[in-house]
Image (cartoon, rainbow, N blue to C red; front, side, top):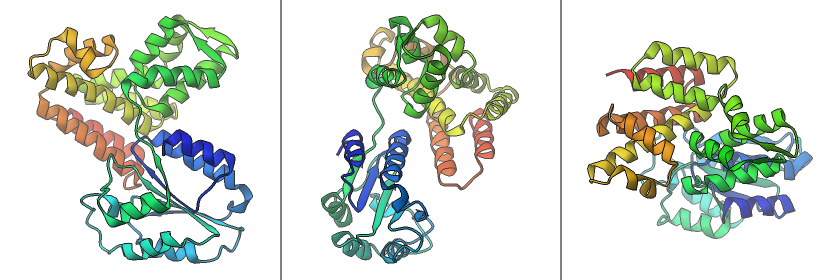
Amino acid sequence: MSHMKTLNEIKKGNLTNTYLFKGTESYFIEQLKKELIKALGTEVESEIHYYDLAETSIQEVIASAETLPFFSDKKLIFAHNPTFLKARPDKLPFIHDVFKLEEYLLNPAPYSYIVFIADYEKIDGRKKISKIINKHTTVADCTPIKDYELKKWINMLAKENFIHFTPDALELIEAELSTNLALLENEIEKIALYTGKNSEVSKETVLQLLSVSTTQTALELVDAVLNRNLTDAIHISTDLEKANEEPIALLALLAYQFRIILQVKLLQKTGIREAELQKQIKAHPYVIKLAVQRGRMFSVNRLEYIMNEIAETDAKIKGGRMEKGIAFELLLYNMIKE
């Protein structure tokens, strides 16, 4: 089921006792989590539990779900990192008794809601447990949007905030912002607060507001990495921290910028000309032009290393394995070092 359809069912109060939110779009996952908490309201307000299945066995989570709630009528459990759904599960110091989960899914406790959050690009659909989950739970697809869908989402978020972008303003946002929906929502909310309801937002206004935003800073950060200037990079990240900007949103922007550079580099190796790159990558022409210029400063191996480091940092932060600020500064060091 799509993220949007699942969201609408939750809003209608059509809830099920077990869910799987799968995919790497954290905006969709957080949106579904918030709506589920809102829908259950006071029934679960003192009984919301969070587990990391990389640290806690599934049998412990099931035991919690089967235990009657003490402080509320019902219980809501979020279980992150169901590694047993991967084709190659992570090595853990304990064993997940997946058979216990299979039994539970066939007869879940009526007073408990379990949400499994698999923020992976892919799960192994051939496994028996995956088939049972698909059959007996509500599965929400939280796959990131594509570059060509960005304009639709910008217009939708603008409508929700009662503003309208002129065509050139829309083009600028599309060029400068990645497909990170959390960041898009944040930036559009800022613009709406500044311009007021029912306003038409011009390119000049967007330029004025984005010039001090995460987006512009991220582009400066990319340049600092390109120039291998660690001092500037750390200075920019410190300014971001003071401005209460989330490292996760900045990571997404860095990932977007370097992913485009890598795609351009790989396609150029096949002999594709610059004019044809936009059709292949489906990104804004301005973004492609910058990526071509920046790509000359990196080898494919170096770009693949940087993308891997960004992914590793993202996993460390989301998994609580490292403090956000330290993780981000370490990433900058690893990206810039030779």
